Length: 463
Length: 71
Image (cartoon, rainbow over all chains, first blue to last red; front, top):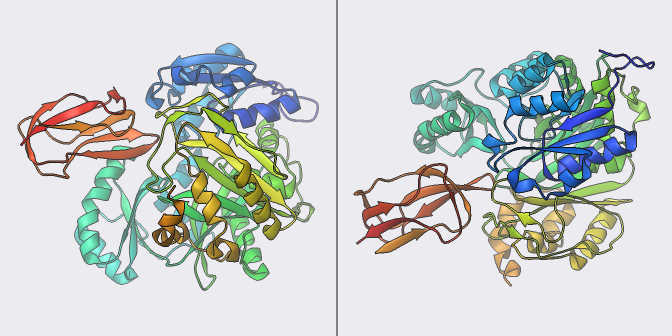
């Protein structure tokens, strides 16, 4: 490996193993740093913005992800022939695939992320619970190991106390977890969850956790380097969800006392230290009504919602990832030198029916973002593009930044009043109404807030 | 005859019935995958499945007839 004068390796060309807005986001930082970029794309994306913006682009197969963006060996092959020294996996796809990270390393390339052992350990929910427990990080009360039979599950659930969450150990992204209110529900769901876990993740190990009611989902951005430095970049509240997936995130978290925030951030750093974490990671916590908090999982990649952290800290997280991947220390190693100012919110704009949350692929006949202040748009599409059924329904991330939360909400209202999208259904009408709600304004909302609010406000969305 | 149609474009994730099966109204005939989400496609009326026009992995467009059910 070639060493540069500052101690790190030379990295002047990287391959981006992803698509859409995150591929563009990575290209943007590379341009700033003078690093050339190699895109790979499926047939469905040949006209996509990220393909045009990258310095080089190579087709890797038909639209379905199994035949394109998940083809690890082909992607590594393109990296080798194009002369890239590293691969950035973005989020989703191969980003949390330990085998891919291992293959990248064995091919003599750098995987821009943590090492494969960490990905593997944190990808297994039972294993990550054990690791965190051993490190003194609080975990949700539940079974230490997988539950093999329904009888065992019933017995354990009785000890934990209903309601319980039945979860696939290899699950993620809201898939492979079911809330069971009582023993009858557990009996009905047990085999289904096992089957789905097997089908989706190739592993049918399931376990039980106590269901924390009226909980908030708060996560902490952490960063580590090869020199052993670990810092946090503060928290994000991701409690506005639909189908167990995030819709609105904000930083800092509203309605979190300074004392609880400090303990949460310290726990996240402990969690990262427990696995000698390198590069960007996120420690997710569930925070109960009584402010007790528990480790939920660790995401070993850049998060979708990383821009709100960038807006409040003023840091470029992709740049930090590249520095760590080169072998350089974190750009800032002293925790007290990392500060936040103001407030940022992210709205995930999805091509979906705002009532049923059903996907709505189609053509973006009109895409007008307006000109409101304090708005950053991370979009993978432009006017005239097709949003295809092959990939997730996110059209763009709308990031709104202001001096404080109240002003951020005001700026959001201005933005949503101006934006115009035609050609497919989106969740815009939902945002317009929801940001006016008392539940959102008060800021002490929990993960069921959107579902509960929809029950009583469906009529307001009708038009 | 009832035509079981795709509500949106997507890939066939599972085919849950076979030709000749007796099905009830509301029963899931095919599950489509679109935008990383499973979309169950149900039959509006009960009867016998007379044809299945798709296989797992096929790409279908909105309004494509996936199967037919004869009362």
